[in-house]
Image 1 (cartoon, rainbow, N blue to C red):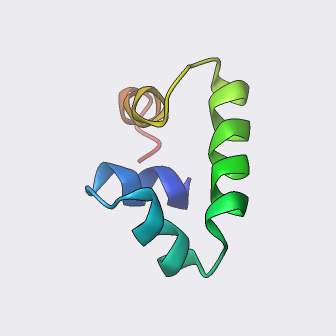
Image 2: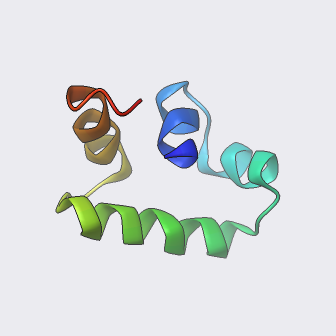
Amino acid sequence: MRILQLVSEGCTMAQVARRMEVSDRTLRRKVRSICERVDVETPIEAVVWAVRRRII
């Protein structure tokens, strides 16, 4: 959920990767996994999903 929190704050994927100290490729895989788990297509939809459920 840290990834979604950073995206919701307006960070780019590159900034999120740097803050989490992972590669861009690793971050893309994690984001894809999150989107699949919550059944959405994009990271922004995942953020909206999390906000609506008061997760972030």
